[in-house]
Image (cartoon, helix red, strand yellow):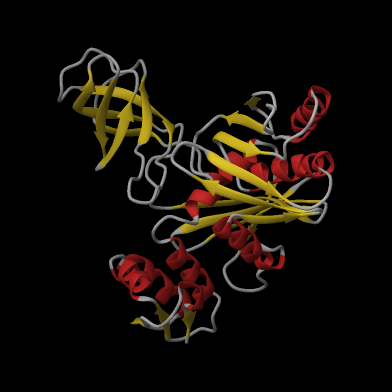
Length: 328
C-alpha cells in the first residue's frame, strides 16, 4: 500500500505519496488559501453580477463566486457550500466558487470547514506518516525539491522525450517533444502525461498536444493508453488528426503547478529550510519581494523564531535570485 509522508510546517502543509519507493503525488496546502472545498457557511450576498445566474458572496472577509444565483436581494444571508477553492493566477486570481444549499441562513460565518490535506489523503485509505519538525528531511530525501523544480519550470523528462506543462487561464497545456517515430513517442508520452497529471494534481481542463499520428487506429490506441493510466475520474475527447486531446477532471483546488507560481510560495519554502537550521538566532536573506512578503506576516516569522529558540531577522538582497535565498 502507498505511504504518505506529511509535514505540517510554518504556514503550509506538504505531502508526498510514495508507492514502491517513488513519489507519485506531491501536495502543498497553504494555511492562508481561504475556505477549502466542502466548507459549509452562511454568507452574505454582496453583489449580483447576472440576475438568476451569478453573484458575489462574502464570508469571514473572503469573497466567493456564487453560481447559480438564487432570487435574493443584495445583502441577504444564505447557506452555501464551497465547490472550488480560490485559484492563484498571475494578475487575476480567481475567486473560490460556491453554490447555495438548503439549511439555516443564520448565524453568519462558517459552520463546517472542508477537509484539509491530511483528512483528504486519509479518506482515500492511505497510511499517513506525520513528520516531526527537524531531524531527517524525508520529504527532501524522496525528491521534494526536484518535484518543485519540475512544477516551476513545467519541464518533465521521460524516457524518449520531454513534457512541457503550462498552466493558462483556460486550461493546462501539455506539449510533447522528442526524437524518434511519432507513434512510439506518443505512446511513451501517454504514460508520462498520466503520471504528471497525478503527480501535480492537475485538475480542470487539460489539453495535450501529442505528435501527429497517421491513421485512426493509432489515435484510438493512444486514447486507450490514456484511459488505462489517467487517474480517475476524468473525461476526454478522442485524439484528433493533429494529435490533440482534451482531458477534463473535476476541479476542486489549484494544482501544484499553480501553487508554486503563487505569491509567497518561495517565502514559505524558505521558512521550511530555515526551520531545519541549527537552533539559535538566524537571518533570512532573500530578494526584496520575498522579504516584503514575510515582513507583512510577522506571525510566520515569530513561529520560526519559537521553533529555533532565537530571534529571526530579515535581510533583503536585490542581487539575489529567488532560488538563491538562504539562511545564515
